[in-house]
Every structure is written in C-alpha cells, then in structure tokens.
Length: 139
Ligand code: UDP
Ligand code: MG
Image (cartoon, rainbow, N blue to C red):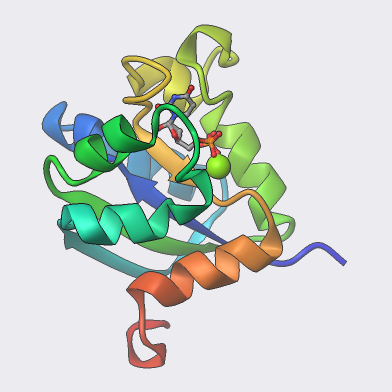
C-alpha cells in the first residue's frame, strides 16, 4: 500500500524569488495537508548530512553550498499516494524537462537550483521528516 506522507523543502532559490506563498498554494490546491512546517536555515554540515546519499556524486559540493545559502521551508505533507503524487506536482529534477504547470517548470532556475525537494520513497519520506521534526511538531 502506498504511504500517505511525504517530505518537502522549498529551497533557497525559491525563497529568494518570494515564491513561498505561491508554492504553498500549489501544494494545498493539489490536496496535500500540512502535517508539520518550519522556516529555517541549514548549516553546510546539516545540508551535507541530509544529502549524504549523494556524497559521491560530482554535484554534491555545489548542492551542499546551495542548500545552506539561505533559508528554506521544510514540511511534512499528507495525502493518499503522497510520494508519487508530490513528485508529479513538482516535475522533473531538470526544469528543462519538467511538465507544464509543475512547480519546477514555474519556479526552478536550473537542475541544481530547482525550487523544491520531494522525497523519492516512503522510507526516505519518513527519514527526512524525522531529520527536521520531533513528534511534538506534527499535527
Ligand atoms: N542536482 C544537481 N545536479 C544534478 C542532479 C541533481 O545539482 O545533476 C541537485 C538538485 O538540487 C536535486 C538534488 O541534487 O534536486 C538531488 O538530486 P536527485 O537526483 O535526488 O533529484 P530530485 O529527487 O531532487 O529530483
Ligand atoms: Mg531525490
């Protein structure tokens, strides 16, 4: 059975574009309920830990630098089939390949600075939510 929660971040590029409001509106309009949310900034060490799975990839250093370059919005979202439906809402990693009307098509600048994060599986959604939120911060 598909899980009903996913984890997202509105990345520093989208925050700098003043796109927090419109992206949250797209998330709510797509039927996701906000379980937990915070506005915060990652240190380079924290960004490196969050993206540890990518540490051997050539873009890792740039990714860590970018993700710690300014504040982000982190959130846990709830909906049936949350992980897959959220990936559909945000579109492909590379905005040049993202479908019309997706968050990345509308707000991403490049494959690196691509406006939003979305978990890739139920297990990663759980781990990523736990990285940011305690049980007292979930509703
Ligand atoms: N990324 C990058 N260059 C690449 C691929 C990915 O800078 O060639 C960055 C980008 O910010 C992406 C993140 O690394 O969102 C994680 O990559 P992943 O392949 O997991 O993409 P996602 O799951 O975010 O679509
Ligand atoms: Mg990913």
